[in-house]
Amino acid sequence: MRGKVALVGVGKIARDQHVPALAASPDWELAATVSRSGRVEGVEAFADFATFLAARPDVGMVSLCMPPAPRFAYAEAALGAGRHVMLEKPPGATLAEVQALAALAQAGGLTLYATWHSRMARAVAAARAWLAPRRILRAHVTWREDVRHWHPGQDWVFEPGGMGVFDPGINALSILTHVLPAPVHVTGAVLDYPANRQTPIAARIDFTGNVSADFDWRQEGPQTWDMDFDTDAGAMSLRHGGNELWVDGARVSGSDSIMGEYPALYARMAGLVAAGTSEIDLAPMIHVADAMMLGRREVVAPFDF
Ligand code: NAP
Image (cartoon, rainbow, N blue to C red):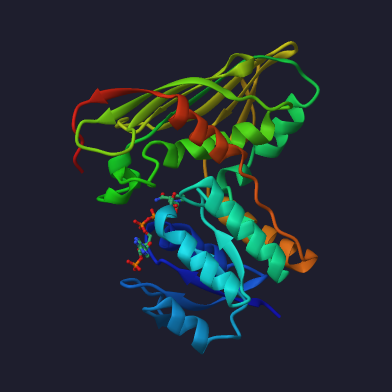
């Protein structure tokens, strides 16, 4: 029998990815939604989370799809009510609040899964295996996309806790921290803040180990989600957000579709619940926090949607 799940925060990512992934899931059945404005046809809809928790004790798992800043209160309430919890990325607005949730889940014997959808991209596992025996001489991440396309009108990305360009950049960091054979850490960053906004629209980051990253949210036209690695035994690249693997300039495998990532997250959640464990890897978010702590601030042109 499939486990019952509630989607909370029915916005862009819930509609684009979670609803189709759940519709095809052998493990989960979408049993309820909680959202002030959105709903999914044919599924019981609640406008308020406390009302949902009281009315549907049969729904054992909640998948939280709202932005990071308001998410903690929902996760805390869900764990307090004995529900397993899946968190969209980034898992919270601060590191400490995610650690608090981890402690709550452990105390309650519940599963907390801090998801990183980009780690489920098609070529990531192969890239990790390819890099494992090699020495990295240089690595560079180029993550440039159009915020107007991916976050149309979403002012929260530029509010405190919204993370700005690190909202997509943390996807790159979730891949980087997974495929590198040894950890690196941030040594410096330059952060471009629009004059009228609270979070950066672009960032250039240096890490130990000759690793660097270039994130920019102002790219129109073709989008770039690439990672290039030079090693002591050849060059490897990940393209299309971890979905294509290239070795020494030749395409080895992959696809430019990201539609396998969310089904893989829900399958992983089913495995974690069955095993009675949690998965909370904060490594990508630590890099963001460090870049924000070390970053030199530059003021750039105001940005409006
Ligand atoms: P969104 O559409 O702006 O927001 C999702 C939903 O969250 C909204 O529909 C809203 O639901 C709820 N929400 C917003 N502010 C809230 C608040 N203060 N309190 C309670 N609920 C609130 O955002 P999104 O693009 O789906 O992004 C949500 C999360 O998914 C982010 O962490 C993002 O990084 C991640 N994500 C986004 C994308 C993408 O392409 N956009 C891709 C991968 C992951 P109601 O108003 O109906 O309650």
